[in-house]
Length: 126
Image 1 (cartoon, rainbow, N blue to C red):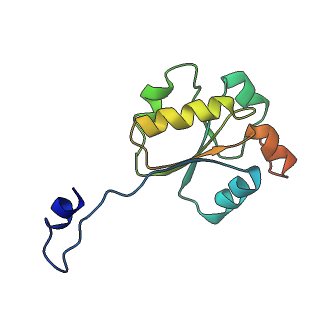
Image 2 (cartoon, helix red, strand yellow; image 1 turned 180 degrees about the vertical axis):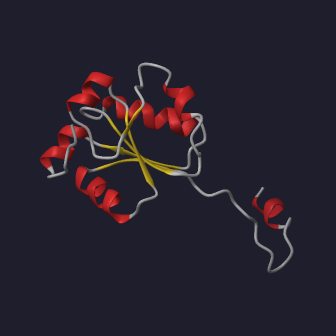
């Protein structure tokens, strides 16, 4: 099988591959560094609106995973960079999987959620 695949390209010609998606859970310290490294990151809080109102990462949009999450994130750029989080990480894991299934290529879930974010010294807006 390998010989059949390798024989399909001319010498010096490369096979273009789609970029490998980055869909993973990161630590709160990594998330803080990620938010500080570039303005192109979109932060999504997947908690309920009342949880979001009680305190959220500055600049985060609220897209509740228990409502029309797939429909709402389906309107976003699949090639963008996203940080998602919830209270403790469980709903964030579900959102990470959903976004991967929808074809997003760069999504990070904040392991431990906003609780871990605060313990690591991340700021919270109210």
